[in-house]
Image (tube, rainbow, N blue to C red; front, side, top):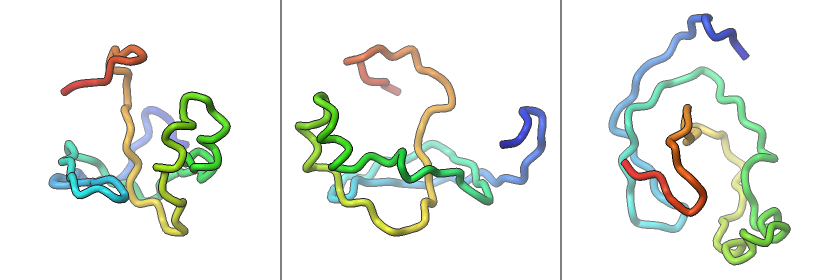
Length: 92
């Protein structure tokens, strides 16, 4: 971790698109920023076995693809809250 006032070398990247593991639908991402190393904990990546232990995820457990043995090159998330509440998805 770096301090909140520390400088890090980064580049802004535009034009990124993502799609689901078995989906043909692409989603354009907003501009993103590069980082030399992505701090990822693989135990935080959902798996079908993990989903079977949570009542609200059992229905989608079989839709979660197997975890691949590959490098993580992109993390997608929010830097701050959007004011959403459970059951009300965030809309742009």
